Length: 527
Image 1 (spheres, one colour):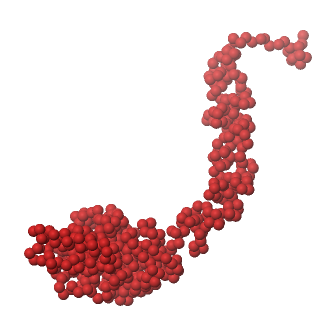
Image 2: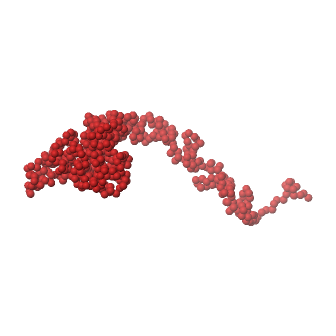
Image 3: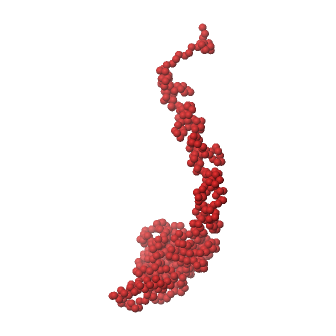
């Protein structure tokens, strides 16, 4: 009788007994439960129940292969696509491409996947490709967006195609046709920028102060002169140390002096104004004169005293300019009181809270350690500019050492008293005469203590500034303070009392002043 081995070798071994699906077998996944054969899952290590199977394996959605998790629950061969389906590495690479830039998976069925023009193996999603490259509208070449140039007609050109017909404006960087650009100092500009771009920076002053007699102070200063017309100003580029900038509030340019000092600084202003006169430059009501005065050698307490004195005497400074200028938003009234200044211990804190468009710009202190007097109207009269600088420089020197109470006692609370305080603080008869006459053209500022011996016109007053337009208010300029008993209407001459009558304007201004005087005479006769 053959043994079992022989029967197996000859193929005559009996078949194993058929297994009933209702039979159970132990799960090899570790739960050791007897599971019906119909519920078992076949794995490389043996049958498993569904629960153990999902703990050890996951099935590829494409090829159905089993992917096993390691003891940490991770599977290096598993990939999850943007459609949230699980695939093996091979199937995932066949179904999707990965963007070389952002790593996003791109379905291969979505059409041709864009690739790098320099490396075909680098594939990109459409969004990343468009952010990195573009197709030239003229030569159809693929170029990096760093070389993209958009034409005024909306085309996207590579650098070579763009340079054939276009250039970039040196100021706004918009594209302009080569036939339409404007050149200045080696640069090319569009029509809009050309009028603003032909400017230059101020250069350090080459002069040196050795005398301070005329200015009366060793304080450094600078000026900004706004113009209405400045024909031929481009010839100053490189020939002067003054800077030239675009000024949005005036038709012309603004010219900025270097930091000047002493009488040599005044000579620099005279030289520049002579150039302006030779070129027939003009100013109008939109122009202003801004004076910067150095505070770098003053303590924070002295700076606050100067700010306090300017705030206390603000009504007086308005008397030197027309109502049109004093109401200008570019040099408005101070939005703080003397009591506000007393609350500050440091001038930096005070300057931080200021608006630069006040009659005195204290915000300049934060950046330049200076402050800016903005209230004066535009002028090209060198004497007027220098006298304005001297008045403020000496005013600052006189008040910085005073206490708040001493400033109140010196200047009082009305503009006439303010000017009397200035006359007391500044020992320069010619300078005070000059500004007394200037203010008298616009208001009744002349104090009684200044009448008499100083009533004559001061020497050296130019007639250039007499043409400056003066606005007159009936309240400010009508001599209503005269008593009918003390002053006879016959002796009240419009020529002597009207500030307009001493100007060269004539015409309408004279008639307005004459009408005011006639109205006053009528009231006196009716009395």
